[in-house]
Length: 108
Image (tube, rainbow, N blue to C red; front, side, top):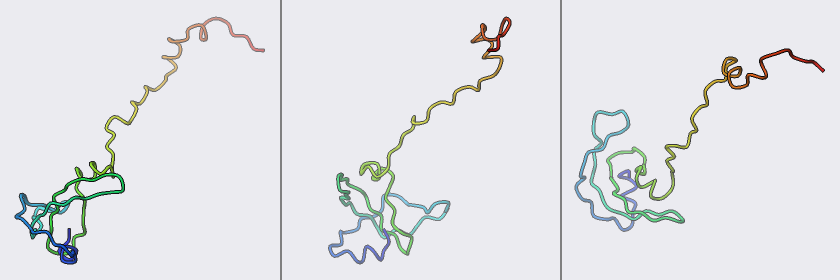
């Protein structure tokens, strides 16, 4: 959560020291955190507890992966893709259907 948004909260929760450093995507420098607080976050159908990091500056607000899963905002389907069938070749067709490829053909 950005510092500016945190300042606009009417009932500001007390900030605790951040348990770990957080990094912007691709950055080697940690973001400056002002602290963290625990909050209940909800959607229309789900409720979850989350640790909210308050950061200095304007970086936008992100919801963590675990919280997004718990709120069912995202769904991870690891085995959703079907395996690709092997390519059909003429050789495989002649082996699997020998009567169609042997003998004299007849045209109607």
